[in-house]
Image 1 (cartoon, rainbow, N blue to C red):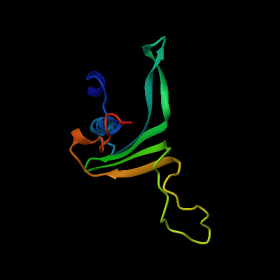
Image 2 (cartoon, helix red, strand yellow; image 1 turned 30 degrees about the vertical axis):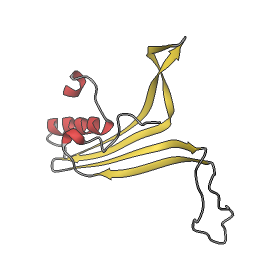
Image 3 (cartoon, rainbow, N blue to C red; image 1 turned 180 degrees about the vertical axis):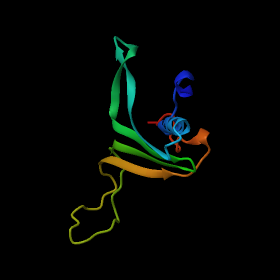
Length: 141
């Protein structure tokens, strides 16, 4: 498998496409390959003020996910993020929102916002070199 010999595997969408292409191209009896990958974000552990290059921990609860269905004619790619914890501690306005008989939240211009986000989307057909569906290499703080 060439992706094992060429260094880093890149984004999970690209890796899923390479895996599906590998199995489909080597097995004439197959008409479709489905690949599901979940990725956790890992970071190096620091000890005594230094990064330990061979020791890691999971950075947070969020997971990236890709579901790819690959046939000899086309490919469908669905990407997702699961369990992304988000907190905003200031300047988070909640006012002029839709109300009904069950509304108890009062308007305010400054309220704590904390939630867990799960989102999924279908990626448009793109060239093979761009199958990462727009994921940034880093998420800025």
